[in-house]
Length: 140
Figure 1 (cartoon, rainbow, N blue to C red):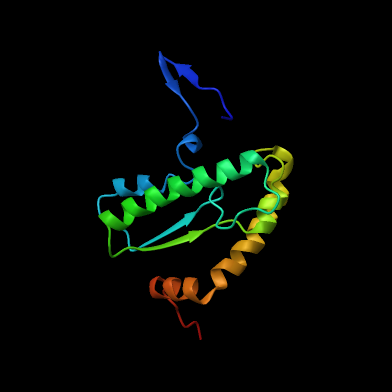
Figure 2: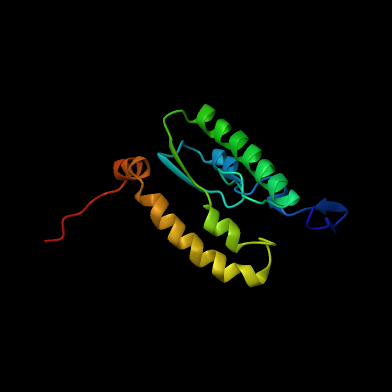
């Protein structure tokens, strides 16, 4: 939809983002199951965007479907692995308009994403999972 395939040595290649915005399923190539997986899913918003342009809805659905498939594969292969998914909030999505791949949107979107992630990571459900995996050292 966005980038034309590139031919190298007779093989056609496309950006990995065409299939997935996270490539989370590639973790399954690890030799051992992981204890914690944190997935940053910039193209898989949870909420429908108010006033979404036609392509935004399509990208959100495609991103959400790919992410769900990848998460299902991780949960099936590694049922004891904790998985946290961090998705963009409405402020981040709005900052990235009209084109999330535009270089002019990169810095403003990144700054909004940092604020959004701070809020997301502070949620009790997220923090309780992180606490189980973080080592807290007393530095007195």
